[in-house]
Length: 393
Image (cartoon, rainbow, N blue to C red; front, side, top):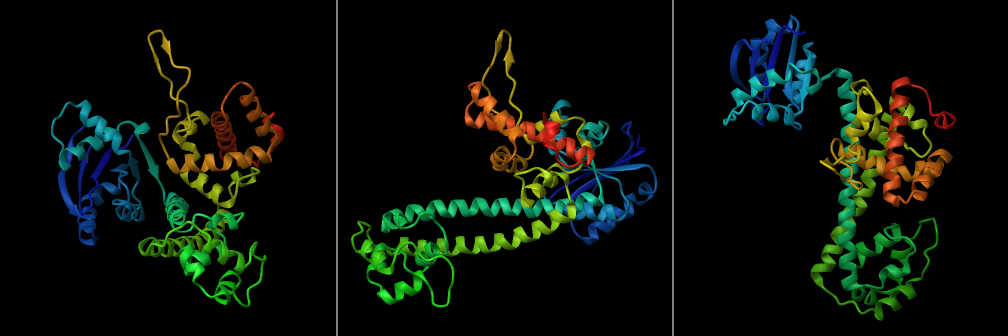
């Protein structure tokens, strides 16, 4: 049991802090301090006597606003606990108080710290995982942005050159994007010199696969197109094509860095067939310290892939959706990789087919496989052993 609670309510520009004992005695009245070096020095001066004793610093995990303060405290050997804001909000509502102030929030944090299940202790090693996690999340966010841009691009193409995609077996390749960046509509292509089109389709000095069509075929298709020229849409197509190309180039750089971090992590998750360096890094960093989960079912709940149980009186719902609570990035990665895992492992494949034979839909069967995969991941992270399909039987 800790002797002193140092409670910090996080804000964007200013934080509040107090020091109290576990039995509720306020040793230092709540005081504000700014989110800068001057404010941090003020905090340190006030709490330094308690940092040398058996203490626990509690602060809400409110986005990035407390990141610098957390590092500041860890560098000074403080024991830091991160609290879900939902816990402090629930504690305030349970107290039936109608007011919410920064001063009161620091006291609520002290009450939350009485229950070890409502917070997690962070270490310096967690910050290394935090860096990799932010990089994998950045990858996810760029992919989502790219998907949005592609959807808008297709809408625009359908207006000015709806026949364009018929020339390609795969969209968004180098030739596809190069044409759109230089000639954005059927009208523009039909009025472009044939030698220029040839150089666009296959620039001089380039190597690789020969395009599936010629410049003459492209120009003829453009002449016969029902698409109508539109200056605004053509401008948008040029911008979107440039954004998509830039994102794809940036993703290569990000993925290379993620692979380096993944090799350093050397997680046993990577030994599961169908899991890449990116997926491994994303899963491992989103989970963090596996010891915070007492069993695999807690990990499944944390991922938000557990089915919701709804029962009231004599009614018990048979079909329910997954909870979708916890880390959305972990859940997204799991559903992205589950099909490759199924295809690369006979045991997962058999489990998937078993669920299909029981009348489950494709997505529902995948969900069962995701939960099975999480049980495997839990075991590997707990023991450090590599993946062995024989042990799944």
